[in-house]
Length: 192
Length: 181
Image 1 (cartoon, each protein chain N blue to C red):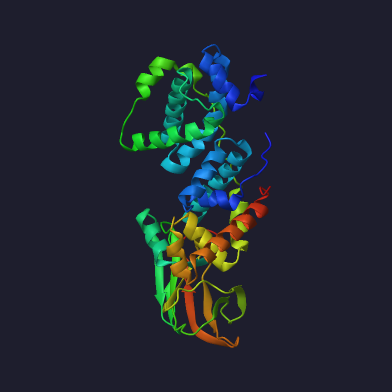
Image 2: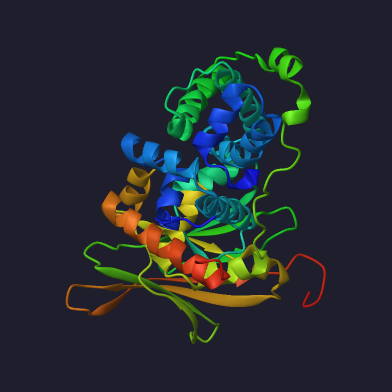
């Protein structure tokens, strides 16, 4: 069967997410009841949705998260280890086998920032990874960074320095906050 | 060949009461499509299977009785039944046992297309390769199941912008996974 007017995967994602207006939803449903190729594409979208859910639960993504995301994880029964660090502060940290997500709340004054980067550095302050243009809630006084728990569980004792870099309208960079994490491995295995 | 029958012809043959094969073709053709409708509205595989059976049997009942006058509007007709059935299921109305007894289980489709399996490691890499905002939008959307307004509020952008970012991210993920067509 060949579809003469295939539905776009993004539209099907909107349908799956139930964000379409009623007339648009009806048109999609009528089409899907007559079209197997688009049904197959919707199954791909569903598979993507389910896999994303599983991936997020694993806590292995390095990313910026929201308070709502953390609450959702807790509601699902996940164990969240969170460290709240003030600008210029340092913290002793670890993860255990029972932890599911590793979160750092980085406090900072981000007022006026047009763009914020998160720079992850080694003990000497050399940048190892940069997350450019991270999403920052307007008016927020902190950023929630999720470190890969898979990585953290395997990591030996080490020091990581995180820096929030704020850019103003003219593109001038300023250090909004620096945070030092003294990671102590408490799990057995290589590197312990 | 029955597979080549269009919907109107299936409706006509079932209406004459003479074609068991047309009934089987109706079930084979429509069951996977109905199941998707069920997954979307009920978010549960077992409930989707129940919906599929109930809609098929109700449709067959109507077609045998010649209640669908405009034969080419089978999909629209079944969509209406889907909606009523979902409402009925949500109210806890169950006619399934009686209908199964009346029509027999032999017409029910034995197998359904399964949801494709994605390479988990590859997906993780693809998600990590997204831009920060795209990754956050995708995770907030699919994991947190947050409405566009909530995501927009968190990011300080418009809902329309969230939609654009989500669409772009989905496209990139599909391309990265090699499933984009």
